[in-house]
Amino acid sequence: PAPPMRVFLEGCPSLAGRTVAFLVSGVMPFAWGRRQTLDQLRQACESKGATVIGSGSVWVGPGHDRRADGVADRVSKLF
Image (cartoon, rainbow, N blue to C red):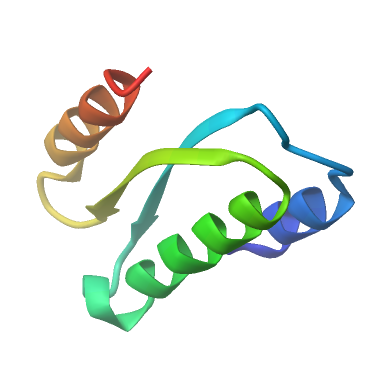
C-alpha cells in the first residue's frame, strides 16, 4: 500500500467489529503489484480485527473510467 495508507493502518489501535472492502488501481499488470497490495491490505486490516468482505482492482489505462465505475459499483454492493 501507499505510504499514507500504511501509516494510517499502523496507527489504528483497532478495527475490531469493522467491515471493510478496498479498491486499488495501478498502471502495471495485476500480477506486478496490485495483487500484492490487495494481500497486504487484507492482512493489515485482518490483523487489526476487521472483517474483509471484498476488494477490487482497476488497471489505469484507456477506458479506465468505465472499469473503475464498474469495480466501485461491485465493491459498494458488498455493503
